[in-house]
Image (tube, rainbow, N blue to C red; front, side):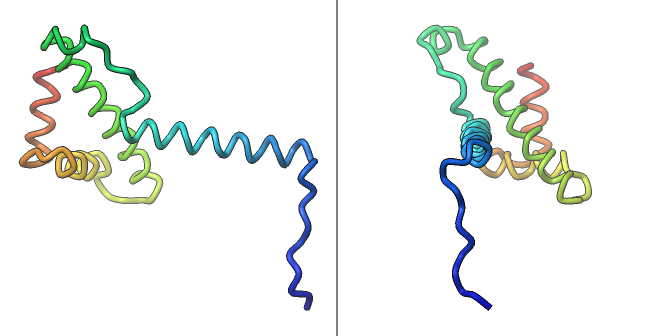
Length: 106
C-alpha cells in the first residue's frame, strides 16, 4: 500500500466551489449560534421594550437551532433539552424559567 495521500487538483472549480460553500455555511452557523448576525444599534438600547423583544427573538432562534441539532442526533425531548442548555448558558434558573421569560417578552 502506498502511504502517499491522493493528490487533489487545486484548480478544479467544483472542488473550490465546495470548499467555499462549506466555509460560508460554517461561518453562517457559527454566527447564528453566537447571536452575532444582527448588529445592535443605539435605538435598541434606548427602547427597553424593543430591546427585550429582540433579545427574546435571538434566544428563541438559538433554542430552535440547538433543538434541531438534538433532534437530528435522536435525543428525546429535544426542545426541552435545548431550553435547559440555553438557560444554563444564559444563567437562568432553569429551562422552564427561560421559557416563561420568553413567553412574557414575545
